View 1: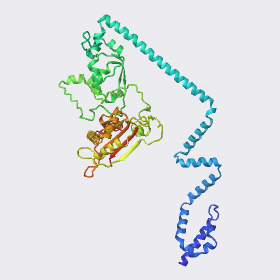
View 2 (view 1 turned 180 degrees about the vertical axis):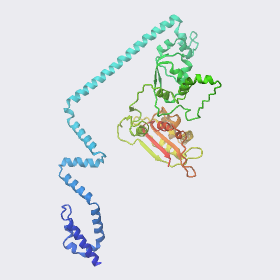
View 3 (view 1 turned 135 degrees about the vertical axis):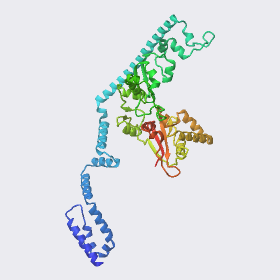
Length: 488
């Protein structure tokens, strides 16, 4: 043991001698009487060995620390304060953090001295005021124009056919008691109808049933959510417009029957000559009929395209980040958040996916969020809530559980009524497109079965373009998204 101690002392003294030239090492406290105290070294032998090993392993880091410390101590007091603030902020990009802090300080300090900026602000306010005045003048002008057109149309109708009151059911009395259908009113004098109703909002079926079938009937036809419109359903409405505007998203839901049965077009030709003569025409017709939607028809036909660059729904960038990157090539510019908060809550429920295609544990988690974590806003109103599931069976289960909770507790029943007034819905992913809510609660439904197996069969999402369903369901939230899942 004595020989071992002497060997260690010899090695230690050699180590000290080698590092004497480094000003940041000071081993003087180990020399003299303390080193001669063999009993003390014996008690601390192992700890000294660990210290030396640690010093040697971290020697390069210690050099960096020493250089940093030397630099830091050489700074002025205000410079040290700035660096300490940067360290505490845990900034991922110090350069950006420093520039942000610096420019904010400069603008705050010299705000009152920046005359030109204040002058510009005054001009901007003046421009905004003039713009509002111009809009009001435009509204008045439009109202006056249409009032004159309506008066002219009424005089023309009276001169040609008689009393307009009899057509429009002006009063329900003996003289005007007969009730005319809207279709009859429109077909009697379409120009008179559009002079009173210049904008008509109908779906394609109503358009076909009540509007005259005339090419160029309207100046402009606008198709909204065109990715969900079948070409055969909208064609008659399509030809009624001089100009067509087709609005939609190719990455969102196709027509509702797209994920149902496949449509097989079987054409039998008995006459070979007829097939040869009509081959080109038939190919063109089939190509048009084969488009999954009116929107796809417009895209493939080479219509002029115009894209939205801003995502307007989500009030926090995180709510659109995934879809923006996965489906839109990060092209969309999201709206910045007004204040810092976490808009996405992830709940790993680990419930069982049962044979009836439901997940009761996830449904309970959704109910808990709805009744225990949704609170009124500052004005006393509840935020609008949407509950979205990955299949219709889970949707039905959640609806049943909500009714059960409301039946058992009066307080929950009152809250449920207020939530319904604010727009509460429970829907499955196939019919949620077009909806938006302040808060969306998603139940992914699928998970391990009772045998502990996870079957990756997600219904329509597994199909070729099922990603469109996923894109729709995760982009409905304006402020917050709760994700309840049992997918391992």
